[in-house]
Image 1 (spheres, rainbow, N blue to C red):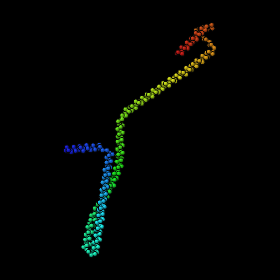
Image 2 (cartoon, rainbow, N blue to C red):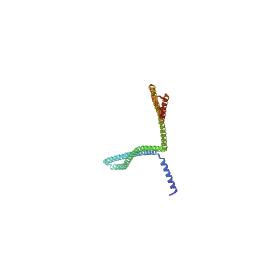
Image 3 (cartoon, rainbow, N blue to C red):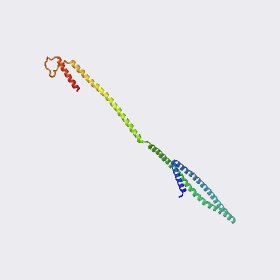
Image 4 (cartoon, rainbow, N blue to C red):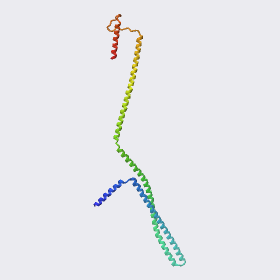
Length: 259
């Protein structure tokens, strides 16, 4: 393989690659439909020209047939009049027109077949163009959907979901901590108030009981003083001794309360 052939192949390969990369499906489909429509216009023109030629050939054929018939009648008339030479000349003219009509008939048959073939091709091309337009719209829609999907996937791939989810988890943890703090503060505040009211209620009951005991002591007769342990049961003991016994009982009561 020569150097020029290798360079040519490399150049064509690179050119094809560039063309392939530059191809836009929507634009290529639009251009393909435009090209097919241009071919349809050319085919219609060809069909019209073929039909026109067929019509001209048909007119020439009919004219030559008519002339051949006319000279046939003239030959018969000349023969009836006894003029054989004139009849012979008329038959020569008739043959000329008949031969021309035969040639035109062959040409007319060929043109008729050609026109029919062109018409079939025209109908087929119109059907193909209609199908191509439908397929073009479908492929354009698929191409648009593919581009949109590519953009979506590119956008999703550019997003760091792990860091975003980690941020959500951190924020959720902070919110949970704040909620726990709020709940704890509420419980502490509510518990303090309850304790204060319970203390007030307990204190109020003790004071009432103490007041009732005072009233009972003031209205009751003086109780008999019990002799202290080790003391004499002598009825002649003095008030000082009785007071000392009460103090001893109070001290014992205080000691028990403190315990």
